[in-house]
Length: 307
Image 1 (cartoon, one colour):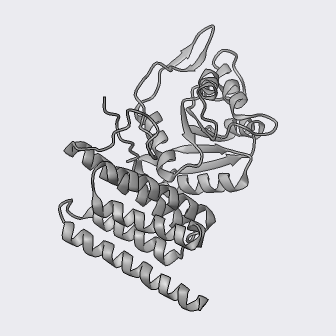
Image 2 (cartoon, one colour; image 1 turned 90 degrees about the vertical axis):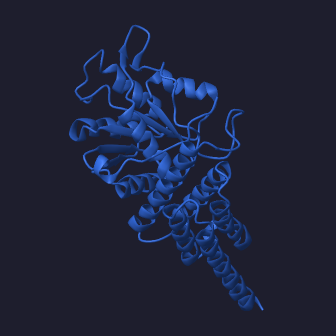
Image 3 (cartoon, rainbow, N blue to C red; image 1 turned 180 degrees about the horizontal axis):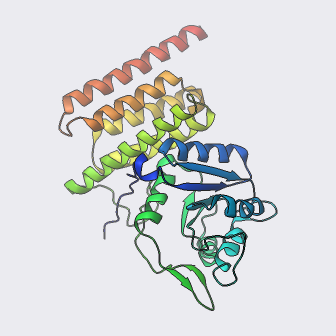
């Protein structure tokens, strides 16, 4: 059985009326998530550094969705979620909407940890380290496929019986991940997904005023996803362009050492290839050769400085 490819095609217009609350005790993570959501067009984005602070914000902000970390001081993400869901049984003046979607953003990924989060009433998950499209795809999921809310003796929260999920966006990790996507519709879906993720990355960089360590690391993950999907759809030029940046990053000692010019050039060329006719192999090859020439110039400049 083929698994669906991931997508995150919400527009800024779709998101402009939303209010989102980001809860995490790491300031850099909060800033990054807030920048991603604002760059994507989310109308109002608020933040809190722990579950207790988040609870105090609920009545004032009444968010449409919540992104929360798992491990936090004072009140962690699970306890925050439980307290929100239990307001459906015992009214809580701090919780205006017990059914508000909660998206857990965490590095915890074992089967038992996922089950604990689901039992607490979490709607969806984003695994750290994340990309812009990973956050946006979960918003799309809770908006376009809302779960029925259940209040019972043993459980209060979103119905877990829905089986469809967006596919993992990274390297192969399951036996039923497709090695290739041959179907024309799925091929276009893969290209659309790459386009959305690249555009989200460009918006994030613009919102932050240029590349920094966090955006460079995120760009590296986006390039890994792009190369993976390009291989799935057998798009040699997309694969070659994304691989060029990944190889260059390894050559210079990590993505954080890549020049902004090189990163911008790769994002631009990948976007141009995706916008052009899928069968324009000559034009795509010319653009990729331009990237490779840029990298050769940068390599020569570094060697000259080191001499």
